[in-house]
Amino acid sequence: MVRVASRHQADVQNIYARIGSEAFRDWYQHRQTVENIRNGQPYFNGPSPVTPPERHSPSRLLQCHRKTYYSQLNAPEETTDPRGIFWFGTHFEEDLVLPFLQDAVADEETFVCNSLWVDFVVETDVGEIRIRGETDPVVVDSDSTPLLLFEIKTKRTVDNVTEPNRHHKAQAHAYMHGLSEKYERDIDQAVILYGGRTSLEIRSFLIEFDEAFWNETLITWAETQTTYRLDEELPPATPEYNWECEFCPYRERCGEGDLAYGDSTPTGLLPGFPEYPRKKVVDYLEAHQGVGLTPTLAWEYPDLAEEYRVYDWQCSRCDATHDWQIENSTETDYSTPDCPACTGIGPPGQLVDPGLNEQQPPEGINGGT
Ligand code: SF4
Image 1 (cartoon, rainbow, N blue to C red):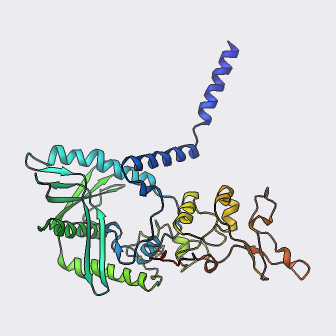
Image 2: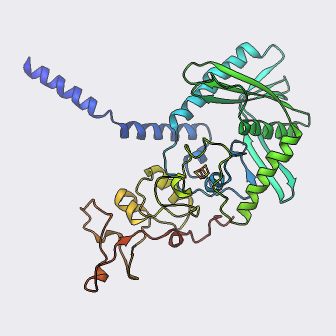
Image 3: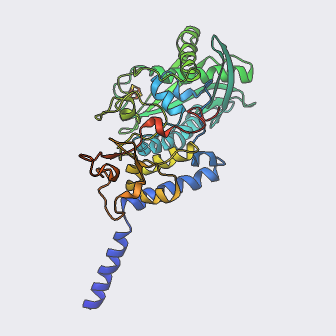
């Protein structure tokens, strides 16, 4: 009896040992990969290519120019994605809003389409600007011609939502413009619908296409962003909204974080910064040919050092460089090796990661576009 009890206890321990945050993260990642392949969207599994300067995504319009610049150029992100928010957003739209529109909003003459693509070009003062993206659900007629498009967003609570956010309006305007052009009819109204993650309450706003907002705000923003890209000029650190810096994945790179970085180029891993999430490091290395890991990150993720190039340590005092493994590979304190080449000529310099200028990709920041 005692033996049976102890075997049962061992089974429980074995099962419990398989429940770990790393195991869950890996399982979730794999599940996403399989789902993307099943949906015919394998491109979501790898890094996105560098966005051409003239191209804009509706979901990124009217946001901080610098954040958009970093994102378009695949700068390494410093934080993990808010996967829980993404997960809720997807399920809120697919499992609740779509059935609601189908069951309670559409009638015998109208239908609900999951999404529609828009891809159009606008002539501007800086040349052609291209906007591509995929709408949220659209109510269509029996010919599948759009009648009313929806833009679905979630917030923790909708209690204090009294009007749609400006950048959500911009997104809906891009879709209205694109669908009007694609279907050769005026689609000049859209619903922006917010769902509360805590209460599942909704707030919705019917908006009209506003020509002045389109030309003077949205197109002007896109022209400005394209100009920064064409000139390879880092935009100023001026967010469009107060909340942007708090949730920005480039806070340290930009100079809004706690450390002594700032106004950094979009490529290169921040020297001496070990906090990059592993997946973001891989995404960055896969997105830019010829770039490598800093020695600091090679010590943080030794398995990646077997797969990718690793830069040498550089001496902070003399011109010497040293292999990243100069410290005993069983050591975990990678942060303060002294420079062996300085020995005997005063206090040795410290080995540091190469600066951002030494880490630039051979094809340039625009990825050869
Ligand atoms: S930290 Fe703020 S200013 Fe800097 S890129 Fe991010 S949003 Fe823009």
